[in-house]
Length: 51
Image 1 (cartoon, rainbow, N blue to C red):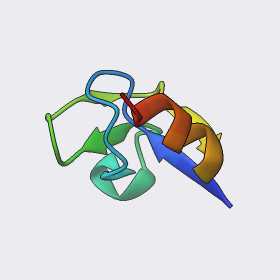
Image 2 (cartoon, rainbow, N blue to C red):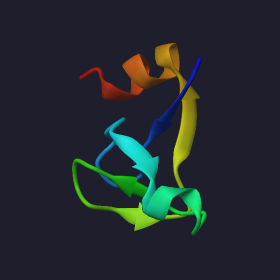
Image 3 (tube, rainbow, N blue to C red):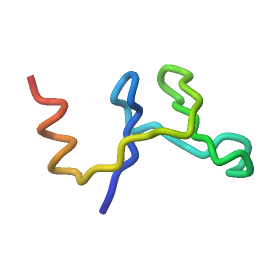
Image 4 (cartoon, one colour):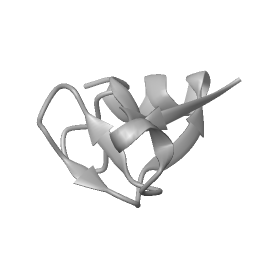
């Protein structure tokens, strides 16, 4: 399963902006709006977020 990840805050709280009509995404965590998001697997996300 692929996750959508915010390029700004690395949150997975991403949804389509304006119901998907604009082709942009909205991050519920930081408020980012844009067409670029990172798509990765759960394992890749775990590696990204581990410190």
